[in-house]
Length: 137
Figure (cartoon, one colour):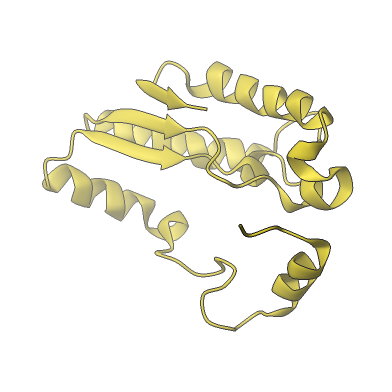
């Protein structure tokens, strides 16, 4: 079992360029989303599964209102996937609790996160519920 401790978090925050840990680098979908959607459509893919970054909408996780830039980013994705004729399978949270919530609230060990997650989920339903065919909470 891999336990996330403050020591592990502190060490991970220090290592800017050590390999790909802790998930600092990837396919850079953020900057290639339109290209990726077009390629999926070209392949005949009819469903797009992706997850929402809680921290992109709520950088700390406990803010009262979502980050407008995050809303705009996901508005674009949902509309483009819909225009491409694909259904959406949305993972609401894929092991991506904002780090601030882990460091300041103890993560899911604190029942306060239920309120924060409910706020996050409400934003998803209210903004993009019409586009989402399948939800995975």
